[in-house]
Image (cartoon, rainbow, N blue to C red; front, side, top):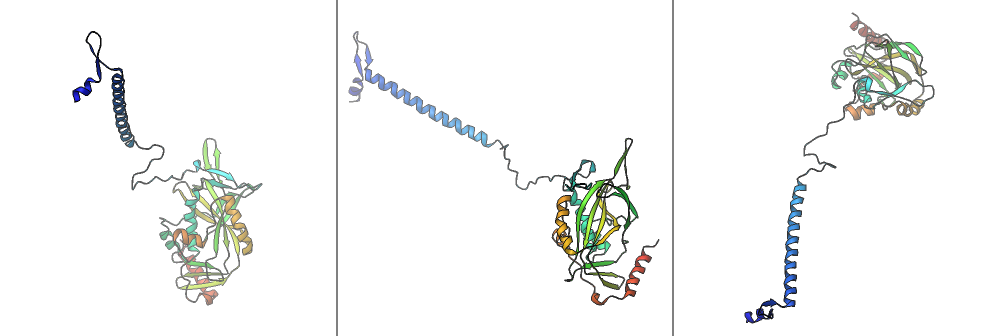
Length: 328
């Protein structure tokens, strides 16, 4: 039967030659083409799979995925003042400027935190230790400093500074017995002069000086030393502090309080001006709340009986102790 079916595909040409019939030839060619197409598709799929496997081994350069546990190296803030930029405050006639990049103020923050801590009952030694300083960030050997005022005029400022007396504590509190001192930046300046090819600073190792406003809104000041306690009522005052960037230690030091720039003002005026100061001169408003949130430091407990500790003899005893402990 099979032989008879196959014989139907052929015919005998004149001369006795056996040939495929036309329809059989067309069918044969179609079958060959189909087989070739199937082989081509199978080959293409296999090649595509190989390519995909190779691509899977190539890292994605446009959006790399860091390996688990890897960390990015943080950008280092420049410690060389030569890499800092000074930007104007935008106030007409004001020569004081803010520093860029803003990370420079992060280093200043810690020194401000030290002062806030000692205004909240921490001794100088305690504040130094808890904030990780190797020594107090305060310069005690400068009685005067050469500065420029906001108008750009050079002048010599006399400085006031409470000595670093061991065990001495002070509190500046409001009517709710809460800390009541804020600090606000008010511009910086470079005190470098070029003499020939040599750079000289006005104030020793401090090429950059910053003004910081101290707004003291306390209604009471309390002090304690050697078992003596004294408290007195007070009114809001604004003072100006100087801070210098030390090229050797790469640290901001508190240089002192301007003896002449000390004025009484009201709390409402202080609050209204604080945001303007920080916005124009960089930095921030450094307050008791900021100290608590940033360094987890809260005010030390007030001495027992401080409300009635207003005996002038106690105050004099504290002054005598400070003078005796700091006299060579």
